Image (cartoon, helix red, strand yellow):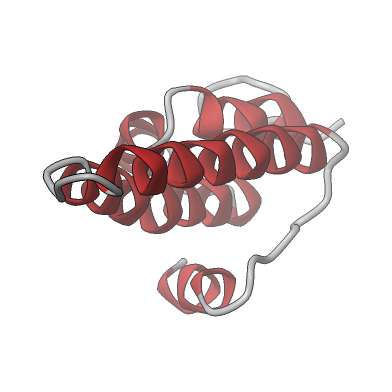
Length: 107
């Protein structure tokens, strides 16, 4: 297994990038300076979960349907969260549409 500059296995560090959503994305972007696999997953976590969190926060203020729309966003977040953690732990550089390309360019 490939180790990161933080002495973690690459796939475990990739999974950890997603554990607390965009927060751990930021943490791993700051701490991991060398490993492109981990930096990719950290950036993808940040670019995926921060906007979705903001969208959910905004939607909850819409009268009547805001609660339903917010719930749908959080269901999407949960599904993405599980898939991305699983694929990162498998050692796969799983790219989401649009966000994955941006993350790849940034790392």
